[in-house]
Image (cartoon, rainbow, N blue to C red):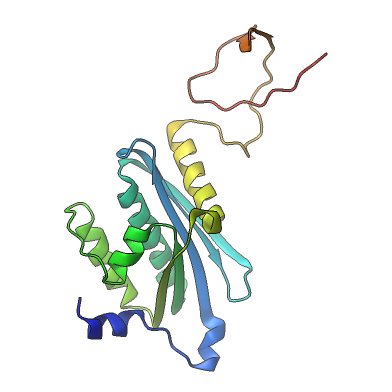
Length: 194
């Protein structure tokens, strides 16, 4: 991508009236196994930092980079469907951010069509910015991506209400259930009874 074209696509407008119309999308994607069960999360805020919406989806067996691009595409799709003209994307994938900004080439045949579709959607906006942050600054999107992966793989999430109370005892540091079994990968909370 030429610097002239890059500047056209990714420069922010400085018109004061448009400052209020900027929406921020925190984007994240993940894959357990890479490739493995994958999902994305997008947390959207208005210019005042108020939550607008949350998006998440299980993607099946995909790579981490595929999931990251899927989160960006979901944010762009949301913006276009809701008449949002100025979108700021925050992502913890350095690869995604650098590819969209034209700093890295997209060599992967899996990612190339996603990259091209992202650029096509970005061109339909009046203003677009994308910024890399560390994972700690992207917790809402990370939470949503993990919820999508949990849901898609049948794992219960830490925020979901417990399905059933089970009884058991501890011997040698191992919990032994008295009534039933739990599938592998289920997270549990233990409340000691004395």
